[in-house]
Image (cartoon, rainbow, N blue to C red; front, side):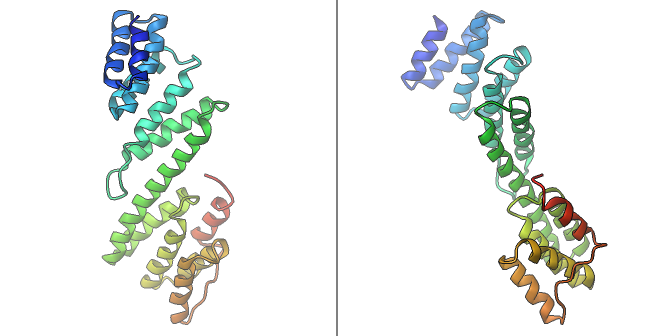
Length: 239
């Protein structure tokens, strides 16, 4: 009766009351079939009410109790969405990006035939873009302060770990800029060459090319450079 009342409240648009009904089912009839179903719906209702941490807690309880059920993929997906919705701008802490990747990766790997895999992959890519964006934001800060080694470390993370994100072109261009400013010409030329090879029409490549040209240089890839090795390893993958 409580469960059906919860469904009726969802249909009527009263999510708060629906959540109370489903939670009452779980409280009054723990570990029952109705409790199992109510936990799924409670996770959904909390997510729909933007109560993301509560949705995550309820979803995790469900997965702990009923890991192999037909609804496990959906609950895992709801937990992923609840983390994804809390991702903040790249100027803020990116813990929810990291959590989104971890949870949605479980959707993809543990439930490969589920209908949620495609969107889970979209959310993973978004979260990776955010993590790469955070590295770029910090790297640009160091670059502006002329702390070139610290900047290069950040841009290197993007090139080596996030090569398939929307930050990769700028990361390579910023490496050109940082290495050139340090007088490490060969690495600057290599970064420009890798950028031009993979993104010849990029505005970032145009800027890098002109920077080197103004110094009497041109893109020239050194096979011994970490940038060249990263390019060969990562630009052909979907890591």
